[in-house]
Length: 341
Image (cartoon, rainbow, N blue to C red; front, side):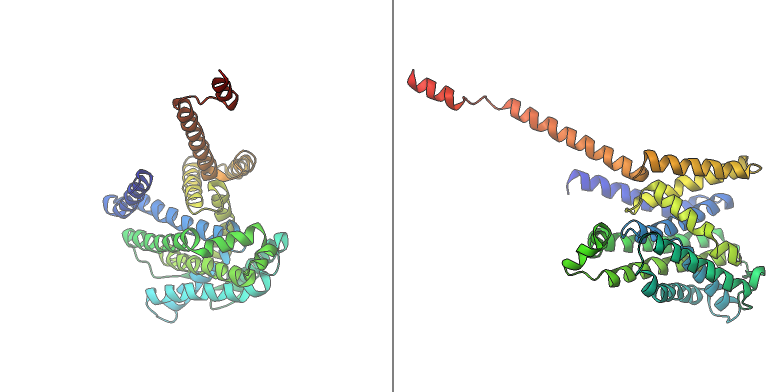
């Protein structure tokens, strides 16, 4: 195994081992809550980035799939008395079905029209949840409490970990990811090489919606209370957008880094400066603007560009050293002059 591949394997194995060991080693409920919340936002950020980063379609209604999963799980678990595992699984299926239904008309739009349509769909669903009796209306719904932070930490880790692994295989190791990138670069040109952009975009939307629905189901049982504003509101999508943009779109590691940075800032701010809500929005806005201007590819994009520059520099130096080590060859004119002498 090459040294680079071996180092990458060691890093990934160490990260997985650390994540698995964290809920066992840590017994503090607050830290376990932060761990679970961080995993949740990582999952939402990478599933949002599947549409925005790999296809180039800004989806401002991604939170609606999270809400579908949360409400479906809550309704089936509390009113139909189904087991939580089955309720959560059906919640993911309902989110995927919603993506299928809305995807056919909405994915025909592009640019700002697509973004506005997805945002409007999310707002419409939230208004519907506010007036339906089955959702509890504006009063929301309560689920039976299950006070076991280790259970939710491992459950969220399992859902997000499997999602990450599946997306990594499909987007980074399978032709599916290359097809999506081809649509992002030139959707009209992708038709010329035999791709079906409408089908691929719909598949990607369903693939991003199903995990978001599962995460929403876990969230509903974990928090034990949901209402339309908390699971269908714009804040769910907006924070996922900020995390993906700040970390680096079009990658899987970028949104995860952005989620950790954003959640760390958010936790420290509300812990020490909770009286300055306006300041929080100002700092967040300045950070987003600075990221767009100075880090257009996000944190991970800046890191990878720097690494590529160093590799290119080392490669150039090694080539120059190799050329210097070779004996000088006489020119054609010199060889002719030697023969004439």
